[in-house]
Picture (tube, rainbow, N blue to C red):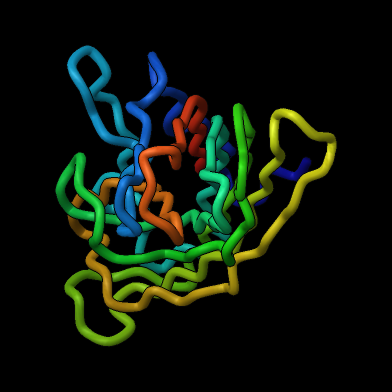
Length: 196
């Protein structure tokens, strides 16, 4: 390794200290996978200035895994990553969304995914191309009672109107296609890496 940039990879966040509360989707709206709760208020943060003006080769890699269940009627789940200037909040600036995965009749199923956030230039404010982040990724699911599984990709998506002079909290969501109390996703492991 040449150490050309004078920087190194590091773990920015590794948690949570206990499983996040289940995203129990009795609606078909996006449900937070990183909802803070008493004794478990740790969430990943990219601090203001983390992506540095004039720097190249900066990346953030997010890996996540957990368990999920899906009702017996045809059901899919979509995993999404985004940023918000407020903690414990979803619906800010979407980074990318993985295409729908079939989770029909899942019981004690598993999910695992990864998002790669590439900085193509950063600045301040929210005008056009103030900061240019390109994010791609994937997620895979497997029913706990079978050996089969499925994987889906996220179309690489550019987020160009986000202010990186302020703190940005990373959030993840699960969105089920049906409304049922049988649908749930529990995030158990979340690791965020800063790479260069």
